Image (cartoon, one colour):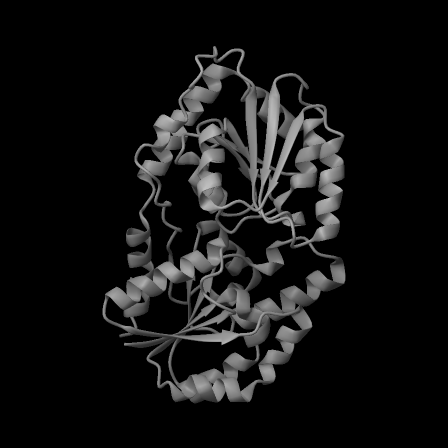
Length: 359
């Protein structure tokens, strides 16, 4: 088959969505299919809306004589009108890979209304869907109910490839009794409003000050104003905070290995690979209650789900995980959840099977 994929920028970008796209492309290529990437320039939302008039881009896609066209749903503002041109010129099915809806995020009222209208029009312009979670599927159906009968599949992101000895790294190294050990909290993610770092800072005011340290790791250059607000809020919390900024894979692995609890109280996550990755180290998680984390985070078993605006509830969850027995039991459950989760090969096979339905 000749398969096309439309994305923004380069496919080697370090986000969960681009990782998913890369893994799917690798699977399709291993199966002997030709995959051609069509890249639209990254830019502002208004600039993406203007992409709908890139008729030269549409002619380029049509000239590839594709059997099927895949689109990362992130590109929806560039395609909600252009897809009608692509359908007429390419004459092949269009499948959308949906990681996360913009309409699921928080926005000012007028902007949110515009986003919903544009995204709904896009969703109604495709033939089928590959969803990364059941929550993402339900969000799409809520926004575009008429698409419920479209061919679809749910293919979770696969469990990350971690070293076999990672759990050994989490064992106490200094002989310090578990009861007196400082609780190590870890936040991993880009410092943007959706990730809930400022809300975590507020909740930490309600956690007893003694005996905990928060490590913050992630790109802090995306929204400098918000980053400054978070740094100021964390300077006022009663415990210890260590700000790492962007970290490489090796340093991130060390942070996971040293962590007792991962706390990323996002407002919404399409899936939440970071939660699954932490579970691979036997670390219980406090995760977003809205979105795909509920597919594998079971409250009270391997972590907790939280609304980031519920400051007192988040503080209670952190305090509960200060108990060594609770933390150890939930950590074992987290590790078991990771081991039971599908590999990337298994997940991408599920996604590829939907594509092959059109062969």
